Length: 151
Image (cartoon, one colour):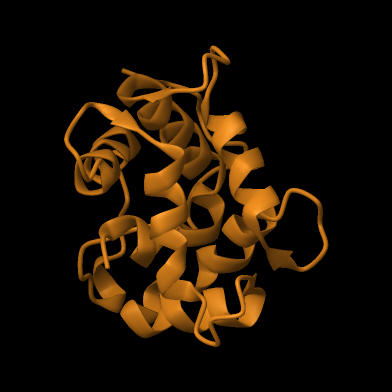
């Protein structure tokens, strides 16, 4: 699958010692570049839903926390620390599974200007801010709250 599947999202094969997502705007841009499948500089709802297909190991149409964590950590065990925090963000109705409803809500969250299109800048901004807010999970030496500097 694509990078969004690995991280969702974090792509790129990293060793345990190499999980450094900084600078976050670069990681976010790489996520976008790897997941804009049709290269139209927009991230469609179809592209988002496609990315979650790899997680659904029992093909029941929903992604459990266990499926999400298992798939992500199989790709890269070092990402375990982020899986629960990201899953909590994705599970918008807090029912313990990811469904079409959650994907629709996540897409709306990313669509800052509410035009039903997630542009490259919207995607990159959301991921930059989100990764920065989760910095304390994968950089134990980081100060909290993290600085809010964006380039």
